[in-house]
Every structure is written in C-alpha cells, then in structure tokens.
Image (cartoon, rainbow, N blue to C red; front, side, top):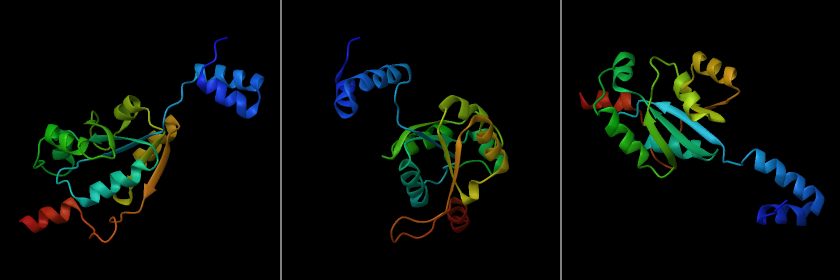
Length: 167
C-alpha cells in the first residue's frame, strides 16, 4: 500500500500499523467540511441577513437556498428583486460557499436538502417550522434554531419592517 502525507502524519501520531488502517478508512470515506444549509427569500438584503450567514458559517460551509420568485410571491408578496439577482447578491457575501434558486414550494425544503445533503439546517426563530424539522429528522440532518440577533452594535433588521418603512 502506498502511503501519502496524511497516512504518514497519522502513523507518526499513533503508530504505523494503526495509521495505515486509518488511512485506508479515509480513502473509503473522503473527508469534507460540514455543510450548513439555510433558506429564505433574501429579497431586501440587509445587515440581519449578513449576521445570520456569518453565524451559520461558523458551523461549516454555507449553502444558501434563495426562494424562487413564484414561491416568494405565494408566501409573501411579489419580490422586489428577481431570483437571479437575489442569488447574485447572496453569493457575493464572503461567508456563503454556494447560493442557488430553491426548487421547492411552500416551506418544503426536501428537493434542496436532497441536492445539498447538508449536515446542519440552520434557521432563525422566525424560520422555525415543523415541516423543516420533520424533513431534517427523515434525513438525519441536525436542525439548529438560532436567536435572531444583530452583529455587534447594529440594529435588529427585518425585510418586513424595511418594506413597511418604504410605504
């Protein structure tokens, strides 16, 4: 068996025989950072969204499902920005690994959870829904609910309050 630097490092730490066994195991199951999944409309992007992404990214690589136009319209109202533009803006945030347009409708995250295969589904208190909990339990995904809080000394923001103030 050919050993590389990972096996050599493991072997030096715990003994050559055990290192080779662990290396063989690593070859069968490649290591990857944990994947963290979040979802939302992200229509009026604001500091609260950025703080949410920053907090979620502390748990691993962040994958963001951005609500498709039809679903945002169905759940809330017609979005101010089209889905492709919202994905563009979200993807530009440094804590986001990958952003994409959501496939599901309503609060059904199943298609996107199957696409990303995350280890963690991270939501804030407003986004905590029973269907999300159920879909995570069915797939063995850890479900984390975060407290909605601004970063540092920034004010609490929400897209709903911003839209109301614009009227």
